[in-house]
Amino acid sequence: MASESTAADGSNTAAITSPKNVPNFSHVPWPVRPRDGINYDFVATLYVIGSALALSFYLLETKILAPLLVENDVDATTTTADESDSTTGTEENGEEGGNAWKEFASGMQGMYFIFAPFVPCLLWSLLVRYFWLKETKKISLDKKDN
Image (cartoon, rainbow, N blue to C red):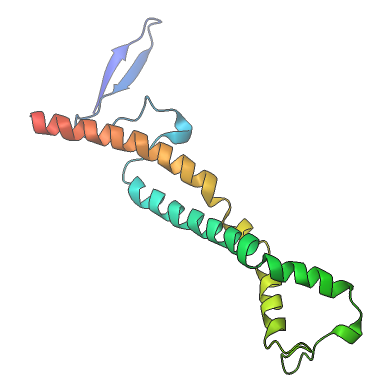
């Protein structure tokens, strides 16, 4: 619904009026302005999952796989006489699968960088969700009053 009005300079402008049951986000800054038809609870939940993956991979690398990565650095500086038999997966000191775990650790190195962008996106989505909830709550209260 648009109604025409005359501005101070004499030009005609169309003022857009919206019904009371439609959220009006015009007062919200554009980077965090919610859009109609998007459930920001769902968006924030997906960003929480992505951020949790980033944190999990970071902790996996720094806390659990760190000893294997340090051993890889030490093993790389040793001579080839100290290398293990790569066909059987056994090392000279009797550990089985040591090479497989070291390869896994080196393959997982930096995996959290893939999911790192989810963290700032989570902060953005929580801010947008705040404005979205604020406006939808106002509309639901207005509906209850009528």
